[in-house]
Image (cartoon, rainbow, N blue to C red; front, side, top):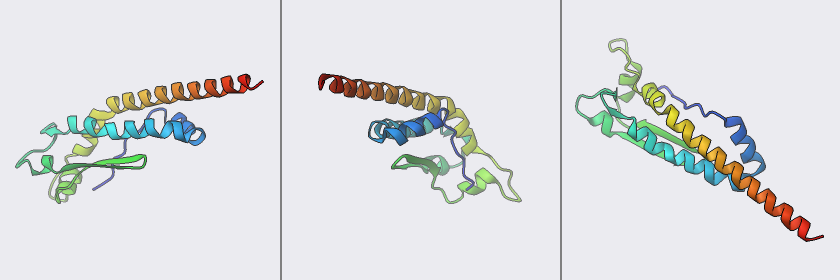
Length: 136
């Protein structure tokens, strides 16, 4: 099946936070990534956008996640042909539709993660500065 990617707004800032403060940033990012499961599941609906005939395609969706990655995908063997089409069947781009329906909520998850990371970094720096001043 062709790959459909989710664009994360503010990704450059999140990557920078992860590079400079990995122990603070990573748990918040992983939590946001894992939360996409519920968002995708909520937006993977019968006939809107997933074509429905027997229910097998809709029931075959699965979520996998790992260290700062996740994927939401159908396991039905024919999903590729339904999504991408064939020379006999018009494509029914349900994967793109799921992503489009989910995008605003996913943006919110990562905005929230970014806000939490910023707050946690600020607290950490403030604590370190306080410790440094106390040592004088």
